[in-house]
Structures are given as structure tokens and as C-alpha cells.
Image (cartoon, rainbow, N blue to C red; front, side):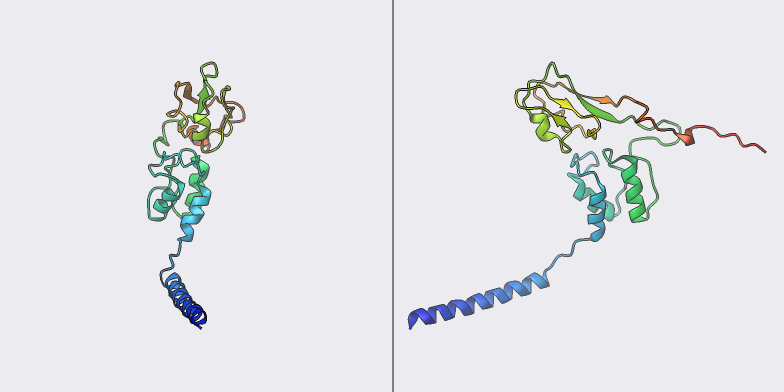
Length: 187
């Protein structure tokens, strides 16, 4: 008889605690802001910290709370335009660049001096977008089309063989700046 009463008491306690936990889950539910999630999806997810926040999600929260939308260098102008459209704010050029009289800041990418690389893989581990290829104790190189210029691979390198260099301008990367050309109006 004691075994049956023990099981009944245990079942009643489980029912009581389950009810309390269920009530607490409903009462104290935290709803996430859908705008923050939408902004976070637009950001490049490099978690580089160049915006002044520890990652893309905190920066998305800051944008939703009213911070500037132009602090993400890896995302570039495309990301700023998308966030401006989503939030209904006015587009502003990337922070740190002057928009009217000076040409846009040149994008920089990582370059590994391969003859000095010891193959430690620390840069590969630090790269948030997998733009560095190589193997342990072998030479590493950067895929420039994938590099966002976040600069996170430079500090971990024990032999200091990584430089941030301006991306070479080619016919594929060159952009015509229409607003930089004065237009004569004909009457």
C-alpha cells in the first residue's frame, strides 16, 4: 500500500509543479521584436564589431532602438539601403566616409604574405565568413571576393603576415559615380 500512495503523491506533485511551470511560461513569456529579427537577417553576420557593437544581433537591436543605420562596413551601401527601406529612414552614406566632395572609401581586403605564413590556422578560425583557405602547417590564402574587410584575422596571426590592402579596381568592381560628374543643362 505504501508504494501506491508514494506514486500517487509523486503524481500529484508532478501535476502541481507542471501547472506552475506552465503558468510561468505563459505569464513571463518574452516576445522578440520582429523588426530586430528582420534587420538582423539583412546584416552580413560577420560579427566583426566594426559598428561598435559585439555582433550583428546587438547592432540590429540598436538600430531598432534608434541608432544610426550606416555603421556596417562589411555590409556596405546595399545593406544600408535595405535597412533604410525596412525602417522607413532616410539613406545616409557609410559612417566614416564623406559623401559629397570625396570619392567613396576604398574597400580593403586581407592579403596573406604566403612566403611568411606558417600554417597555424589562427586566421582561418578568426574569419567569420570563411574567406581564408589553407590547412594546418600549409600556406593560407584569402578569397578576395568573399573577404568583407572586417580585419579580425590580423590580430591572431603570430607572425604578422596579414595586411589589409585596398581591393584592386577592375572592370567588375568599378562603379560609375554619376553624382561626381557635373552635368551641364542645355536650354
